Image 1 (spheres, rainbow, N blue to C red):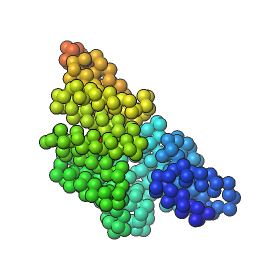
Image 2: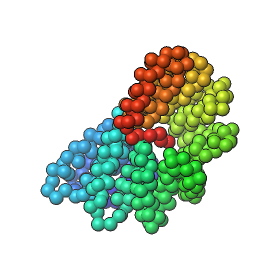
Image 3: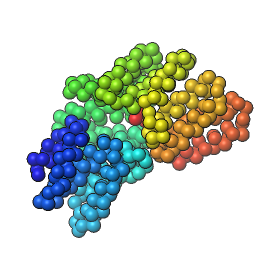
Image 4: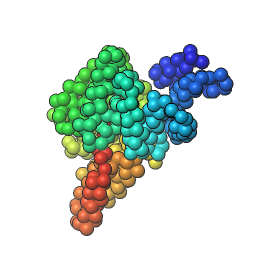
Length: 364
C-alpha cells in the first residue's frame, strides 16, 4: 500500500487526477491498511475530487473523517491540521464557494500547526494558505507575515515551485498595497522560477498579473498583447474559463482606454467561455466589466442589471469587497439616470458591505 500511495501522490503532483482516483478506488477495497495509510488515502481522494469538479463530495468525506479523528483520545495534531487545511481548500473550490468558511478552516489549521515543535513542510504549507486567504482580505500586512514563514522554509528546502508560488502571492499582496515596484519585483521573480522549471500554465498566470498590475498602467496596448499571448497558452492547455477571464481583463483595460468596440468584442468572447449560473468569482468579474461597458455606452438600465448581478454573485461567495465594487457601478448608473434616491440606497448597501467585511479584490 505504501508504494501505491506514493504513486498516487506523484500522479496528483502531475495533475493526473483521474488516474490517481482509479488507484485510490482500488486501495479502498483493501482491508489491511494502517490508520495513517487510511488517512493519506482520504486526503488524496479529497484532493482528486476537488480538481475533478466534485468538491462537494470531498467536503462530505473530509467532514466525516475529521469527526472520527476528533472523537479519538489524544487526536494527532498533524492529522487535524491536514483535514482542516483540506476543508479550507474545498470551500475555495466547491460549487457553493464560501470564502469565510475557507478562512475559518485555514485559520484553525494554522492555530493547530503552532503546536508543532518546529516549522516543517506542513506548517509552512498551512502558513502559506492562510497568507493566501488573507490576500483575499484587506489585511495585506498579515498576509506578508504568513508568506514570510512559508518563504523561509521553502527557501531552506530549495522547493522552487513553492517559492515561485509564494513570490506570486507576494506580488499580489504588494499590488494591494499600491507598492508597484515591489509587486513587479516579486512577480518577475515568480515568472523566472516558473519558467526555470517549465511550468507553463503558472508562468502564464504570472504574466497575466504583470500585464494587468504593472504594464497596463503605462502601456495599455502592450498589456493587451501580453494578455492575448496568455489567452492562447491557456487555450492550448484547455483552460477555457481562464481564457474567458483573460478576455474580461482585456476588456476592462479597453473600457478604461475608451476603445469600446474592441471591448465589446472581448466581452462577447469571454461570455462564451463561462457556464452561466456557476458560482465563480471570474464570472462575477465578467458581469462587473460588462456593467462598466454598458455604463460607458450609456445603457444605464443594463449597467444596473449587470452590476447588481455581479454584486449578488460576489456576495454569495463572501467576497464583499468585490460586491461593493460592483455596486459602485450601480450608483453611478442611477445618478446618471437622475434617480438620486436609488443611488443613496445602494450607497448605504456599499457601506454595509465594507464595514462588515474584510474581503478585498484578488486575482483569481
